[in-house]
Length: 110
Image (cartoon, rainbow, N blue to C red; front, top):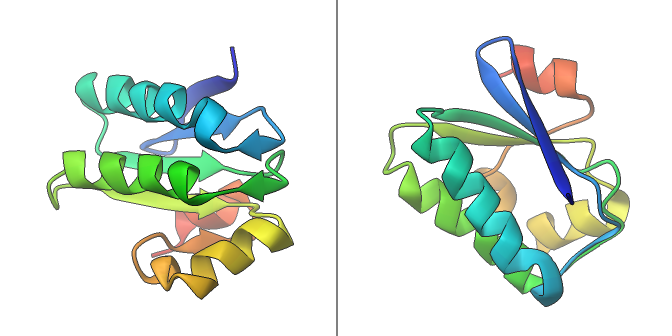
């Protein structure tokens, strides 16, 4: 499995275990996030420590999950690598997905 999740501090922490979050993995990632949300979770932290590269399809999977929450939840990002963080800044998506230096910071931060 390319993803794992656990409940921590009122959030579902989703760990992406792949180095690339691109078109080859985006659909599975979106489906995984949808499954987590369908189980009743409305607060997610996505741990991107392992992800060295993300393209627009990976970003699209996150946007789709945020839309599924219909404004009734939050998706925070943790430990984004520089290239991934740059993608969010370049697309101004860091306004929708707050990025934190660590999972614990994401669990505590607003």
